[in-house]
Length: 524
Picture 1: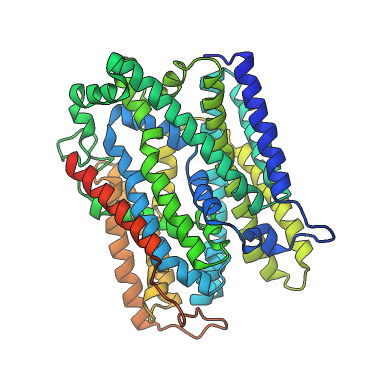
Picture 2: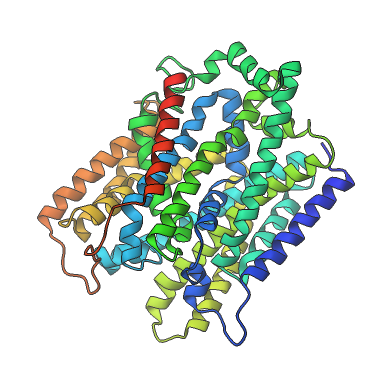
C-alpha cells in the first residue's frame, strides 16, 4: 500500500490543524501564566463533551485498532467484550468513585493514597506508575504505532517512531491537559469517521446489492462461530476469553483498575468543574465505547470474506485499509495517527503530573507554581525521549507486544483495585493492609505466571487476575485488623458526598444496560 499525494496532503492538513488547535485552545490569557491547576487539570473547566471524547482518545491507540481487529479475525466478536463491558464500568466509576475524588480535590491517584493511607504508599505507587507508563505504555504505543505506520506506508519504522514521539510531545507540551482534552474531540471524531468508512465500504463489498445489512448478515451466516460472545471451554480461544469470566470474573478487575484508578485515564474527569459535568462526560464516553467494536472489531470480521488467507490476524486492519480509494485512505490513515498521538499526549501529560506533584513538589514544597509547570514540561520531554530510546530494545524481539502489556500490568492490577476500593468503602483499611495487598498480589501473580509458563497448571490470564484479587483482598483485610490505620495529616473526607445521579445519567445507564442485555442474549 502507498499513499497518493492527496492522501499525504490530508495527513499534513490534519497534523498542522491539530497542532494549531492545541496551541489556540490552551493559550494564556493576557498578562497571565499557567499555574499547576491550569497545566495539569485544564483550569478545572473541562466540559462534558471534552471529558468523554478525551477518555476514549486516551484509551484507543494502535494496539487497540490493529490488535482488536486481528482478534476479531481470529477469535470473533467475543473480543468486543473488552469494549462493551468497559461501558458499564465507566458508569460505575462515574456514580461511585468520582464523587469521592472530586469531593477531596484529588489531582493524582498517588495523592489519594497518601490522604487515605500515608506518605509511604504515595511514593511507592507514584514510582510504580511512572515506570509502568514510560517503560510499558509509551514504549508499546510508540513501537506498535510505528509498526502500523510502516505496514501501511512502507516508511522506515525508526523514522515513524521518531516522528510519532516528536509530534505526540510538541503538540501538547505548552498547553498541558487543556491542549490534550480539547483537541481530543477532533481526534475522536476523526477516529469514529475513519472507522465507519471502513465498516461501510467493507460490508458493502461483502453484501453486494444487499448493501451493508446484507454484508453483516452474510458474516453471521457464513461464520456463526465468530459471533459467540461467551466462549465454551472447548474453544481454542478459551485461554484468551474464558467464558463467563468476561461477565463476572477477572475482566471486572482489569476494567475497574484501568478506568477508575489509572491516572492518564481518570485525570480528564478530575478536571471537570463539577461532579455532574464529570458524570455527563463519563456517560458520553460509555456510549462511545458501545460504538467502538464497529470501528476496531468489524474490519477483522470483514477480512474473513475479503482476505481469508491472511497469515496473521494483525494484518486484517491494514489489509482492509488497502481497499479504500484515494482521499478516503488519507482520512482513515489520519484517524489511525490521531488515535496514536492522542494516547501519547495523555500519557506524557499524566507522567509529568505524577512526577511533578507527587515527587518533585513533595521534595521541594517552597517552589513557585511557574517553576512546577516548567518542571512538568521538562519531565514530559525526558519521558518521551526515554520511551523512544528503549522501545526497540524492549519490544523489538517481542512476538506479541500487546501480551507484554497485559502480563506486566496484570501483576499489579488486582492489588490496585483492592487498595482503592477498600480505601473508599471500608474505614478500617490500613496502610499496612494496603502494602500487604500490593506486595502479596505481585508475588502471587509472579508465582502463578511462572507456573502457567512452565505448564504445571494452566489458567487463563483473566482467571488468574480474579484469583489474585481475592487473595490480595483477604491479605488486606487480615493485616488491617492486625495493624490498624494511624491518623493521616489530611484524611479523605466522606462527609457531604452524594451518590445520587441525575435523571439524564440514569437514563443513559439504563440504555447501556439494555444494550448489553440484548447483545449477550442474542449471541450467547
